[in-house]
Image 1 (cartoon, rainbow, N blue to C red):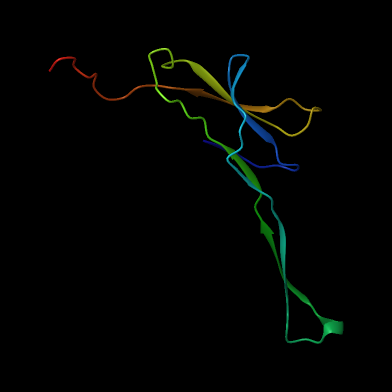
Image 2 (tube, rainbow, N blue to C red):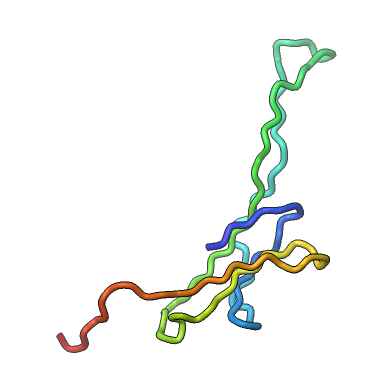
Length: 106
């Protein structure tokens, strides 16, 4: 899973070389500022007591139905881009296998 934020919120994609593997956003949280007012004052003198930032983020989870030997040590890249002016942020991911090999026929 990749979770990114920015203004504006980026498009998050998964790549294998030059091939797009996944560009579907699973979750998109638009943030802002939560403003709290003091209700004990009159309307004319309402005072802002708290400004709380609400986080903004986008997630995209890459699902691989069946991991094969092809996927092991194969470089995948997560890219986040929100403007054509700057290159996207990238994060390489290398899949590895842990655990014992399964024995056939035993």
